[in-house]
Amino acid sequence: QVQLVESGGGLVQPGGSLRLSCAASGFDFSQYGLAWARQAPGKARVMVAAISLKNSVTYYANSVKGRFTISRDNAKNTVYLDMDSLKLDDTAVYYCNTHMDGSDYWGQGTQVTVSS
Image (cartoon, rainbow, N blue to C red; front, top):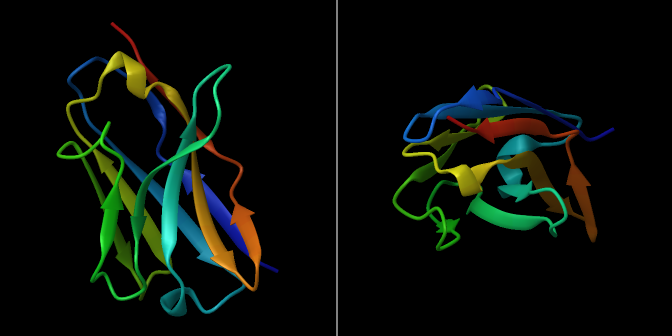
């Protein structure tokens, strides 16, 4: 079955950096786009970055553009989210996502807390 497992979250000061990883299994990873979304307390889940199957197309929400970078390693079945210049508003649970056969698949999420 499709599994997405996020890791790399933690507590970081404003201006700091983190790298999130999402290890995928149960499907042909190289044939699907991947995305990262986040959900802050009391708010809806929103997509922040996405990447096509061949790295040719990436998408970033305006709130993270220029600070976050999504990438993938098809040999390792892993997608990454490099986050720089972190702000207090980046505090959220971050989820990995893929969409196939009309269904969305999500990981369990990893908590990112930006605090001084």
